[in-house]
Length: 387
Image (cartoon, rainbow, N blue to C red):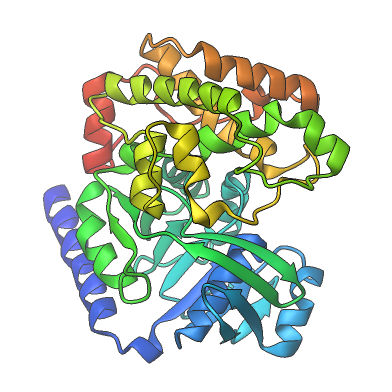
């Protein structure tokens, strides 16, 4: 009886994917959740491409101009005015008749988004975390379970965010660059091909990731954001971010620390049999940047030109990326007996600077449901989605 139910659910979900693939492009409807730097850029770009777009934001004030103008002006690599059908802080109306949910909020907001979406999600919808950081899909899945969801949507996470972008003002965003390719994985992994066929109708840049652990360990924000911000703390506070974050902030010495953080990330991934991409190779792939080391690759990346540093330390590069990227790396490393001294040191310094305990706030193996699991069980989880 149970096997029949599982088989029936799988067949039904295959049909959902087929329906979305065959749906007329002009009828494919998105909801972008989050109207910050990334969400406003993505919503505007989708509108420019002709898709139906809703935009959700928790604060109504932030989207008043978008609601009034019925869209977002986009400049930079993508230019035009993207229509937005609905900009609202009412999650129920934002999700109505939506096919694809693009979650574009800091990773420490994933839990909240999962909580408010849980009563309204449908089995034939696709939810994509842009990006998942480290463990995003796992956390989202656990929250939906906690809130009693029985028929889960297709759940996916991107390895990194598609754009380098900034909000320029009310209903106005700039896309500095669009990455060449962004790996995407689903939980479980066998839905990757089907979900990609749907999302590629809008974004051909999404490519198949191996599984959610590969996308999580290839979270390059974990390398560039926390350490770069911590090591430039004095300059950020003195100038309020008035310098080029990557080009000037990643000096030769700072880049050596980033390389040490990167090596530890690669070692944690390798302990699970996952060959993660180095930060240097990621710059080659995502931006066609070249160089013999990480410093030269950063300096050679035109996509980073003009991007200013955060104007304060109270910023997602610390408050999001430390607990949602570095903490899970260190926590998984500790469980698997992999040393991560540089990562732990950056977590420690960030906690002092922000007067927070990021270990308490962060995604530990306990919060991700991985505590005590064997390497075999963790790898099986990625494939089957079963705990």
